[in-house]
Image 1 (spheres, rainbow, N blue to C red):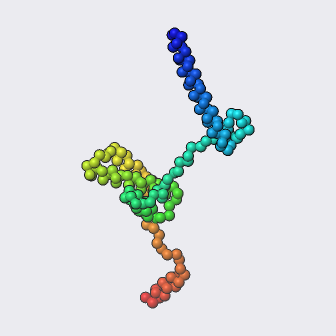
Image 2 (image 1 turned 90 degrees about the vertical axis):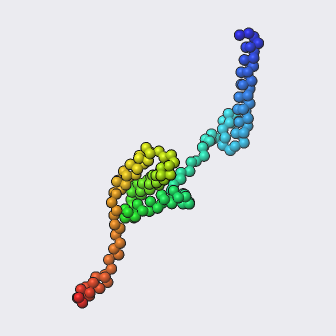
Image 3 (image 1 turned 120 degrees about the vertical axis):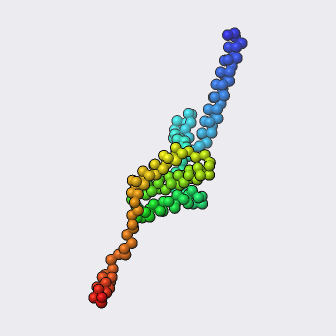
Length: 166
C-alpha cells in the first residue's frame, strides 16, 4: 500500500472516530437534561434503566363481540359451561375457553374447505384432536344442573296434607 492510500484509510478511520465521538457528546448533552440520567462527567447522577414499552396482554373479554368468530367462541363457551353444570373450577374454566376457541377455529377451517378455498387439513385434524382431548378431559357427557329449589318447610307440610287427602 502506498502512502496516499494509507493516509486515506487513516483519514476515514479518523472521520469515523470523530463522528462517533460527536454522537456520544450529543447523547451526553441530551442525557444531562433528563432527571436521574447518568452522564460520564456527572458521577453523582443516579443511573436510570430505559424500559421497553409494556406489552398489554389481551383476553377474550377484551373483545367487543362484533365479529362472527367472537360471537361463535362466546356462544360455544356459554354452551360448554352450561353442559358442565355452570359452577366451574378455575381449571375447568380455562379448558372450556380453549375448547371454545378451538371450536371457532375449526368451524372457520370447515367453512373455508366447503367454500373450496384453501384450508390446511393437517392443521384441521390436529385442532379437532386437541379439542376432543380437552372435551374428554372435561367430560364429554352432558351433566344436568340441579334445579331443585332449596328446602322449604312449608313444602313438606303441603305434601303431607295432600297425602292425607288422597
